[in-house]
Length: 185
Image (cartoon, rainbow, N blue to C red; front, side, top):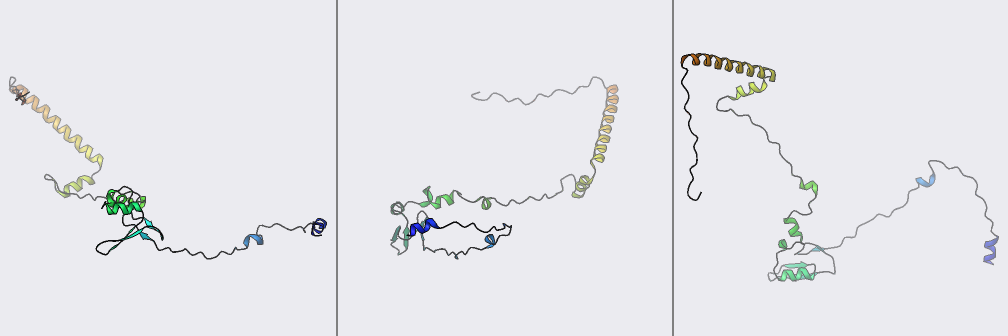
């Protein structure tokens, strides 16, 4: 009977509806249950410093009474052998010692800019240095050109005066210090 009833049902066309931008379907909020994270009490392995979840690892009590949690049989074996965690490449102690896995933000060191301090030189005082620095480059080039012209004029006058007075006076050549061949050379 049920099968026949399903066959006899007619599909009735729905009444036309308008589609609008602000549909009531989209504005409806879905109910979400407040999520809470489950807190699991974990220990840290004394050797590798990895987390030890409940049901894993061993708890060894040292002679002095201090409890030592060890995550794996490998960690237990290495602890019994008195191996240092800093010498084992896979442990967190080694990674910390060799600066592995540090995030880039904490890795960048703040660099200080060095401040230049002006100091007086043997020949010139600090005030003179500051005055020269404040001068314009055109003024400095003009001063340099004037000084060069003065030096050239001195040389030309010196040549004219010395050439006429004594013609055969030459400066004697002094040999450079030559290293003598020592023992075994």
